[in-house]
Image 1 (cartoon, helix red, strand yellow):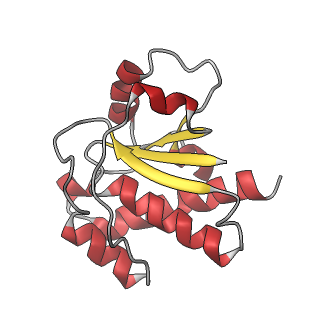
Image 2: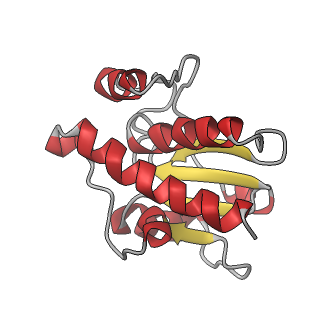
Length: 150
């Protein structure tokens, strides 16, 4: 299985989700069965590393994101991944411009897996990277339970 986490610029929320999920998978012995990546719906941050406050928040939890640089989602990615997990409604809107249809129902919001229809607040604007981490962790835990305990 291949999972792609998506946010606006791929420097805060989606790389946090990527590396939180990778840590969960490794801890539970699923890192070889499930591949995880992240990308952006915009081109604004392409090539930039993870935003320092996001990197620091991950590090507080013992998670490294070294070597991660922002990349952009491409139309051809649809056939390469099993799930596309967006952080908010705006990401979903932009994703729908890249993937005009989702015939295989691969696209979901992260917090669906935490029992919510809400959005992961963007810490770029809120400045609250611990809250973003908490929301992302809850969503990733729910996603993990959905795909690894079937």
